[in-house]
Image (tube, rainbow, N blue to C red; front, side, top):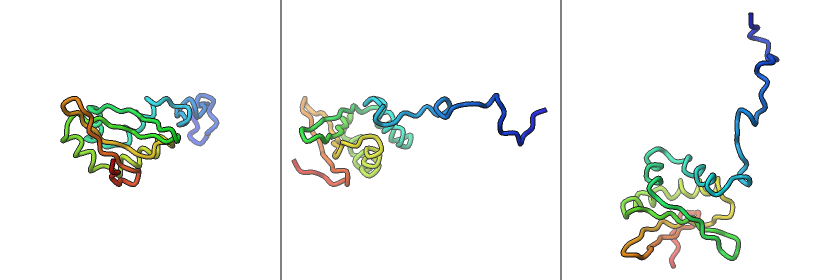
Length: 124
């Protein structure tokens, strides 16, 4: 019979790393950080983000901008309403990213709105 108060059962000898395979941010690839970024959103936002393309533009001063290429203006508008959520999630995934852009491509040209991590629109 198993003693329910015996917490030193040999069959349950696991290391935390075996049970919770969590990587530190510094050990994650950019793709893993992007997946982490997307996981923090609710399901409807994740569905919108699934149709977007992402890239990080690194600047000479060591900072970066996360560019989100939206498939159309409607998705861009909806994501612009989630600026606070986007900035919070950027902070939890990347330390060097200091702004983000919501972009669409029209007639072969890229049109972007760039925001600070405070959610303020930056003028070009």
